[in-house]
Image 1: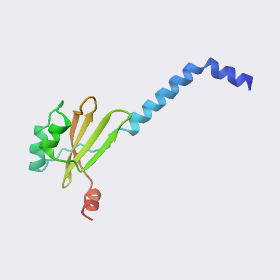
Image 2 (image 1 turned 180 degrees about the vertical axis):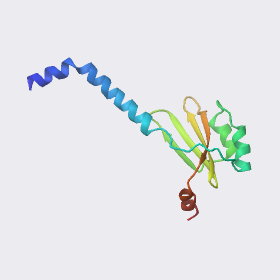
Image 3 (image 1 turned 90 degrees about the vertical axis):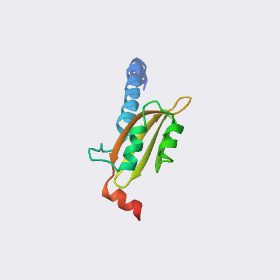
Image 4 (image 1 turned 60 degrees about the horizontal axis):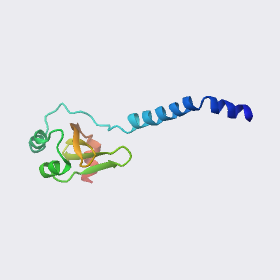
Length: 122
């Protein structure tokens, strides 16, 4: 037992660094959005609204343009928020960074699967 304790004390900084890298890797690989980038033309009403959204806009400015989102995910740990707006198989994904106010960090067109659209209609 004494030998194990000496090993832990000796390698504590390496063990701490490994733990931190493991946590960061889990967040990066598991916490990122899983959406398909659209190369197809989007419906005109969503496309026109999407073009008005710019990086640095606040959440309230985006809500004035797009209205309330169909789906929203908030993370208090990493201070970010994701919102999705759908229209048929097309949609918009907006990633907000929190601070004093939430601002647009990234926007993207997405395509939903036919199964997801069918589930929404049921």
